[in-house]
Amino acid sequence: MKSFVALDFETANQHRSSVCSIGLVFVENAKIKNSFYQLIKPMPNFYCNWATEIHGIKYWDTVKALEFPDIWNALASQIQDLPLVAHNSAFDAGCLKAALAAYGLPVHQNQFFCTYRKSKSLFPELPNHKLNTVSEHLGFKLKNHHNALADAEACAYIAMRVF
Image 1: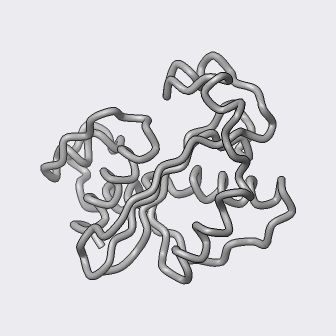
Image 2: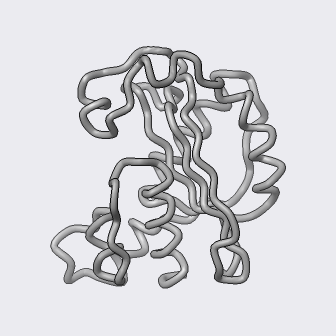
């Protein structure tokens, strides 16, 4: 796979629709061409302590941020029909589906690939298959883990080597 979009969401709480940040890395012909990061006002708009402890985003960081529909249409037109890649795609695909449903937006039909599942089959010797473990195994030092853009960059790096 030479062209795709690596995607990562962070959520504010237990609801998959509560995306509070998005990171996208656009890969064209096996080269990173563009990236995008945005804080998002989540739906529902509350933060659990455990979520904030993971990614560091708080209510006051997103209280004046755009809501998901305000950014999604522009992003969808950039993504077009490119495959989407995520590390643990079940989570990120679920977030996308839930956020679209929460706002009554059309379902996104792009194919999703998972670097987590792929790395489990390719690298069974690793102690775990977390994003930072796999990316470091392949030579990419993940800095600022759980920042949506940093995680999307690591995912893109992995995807360019395993798909």
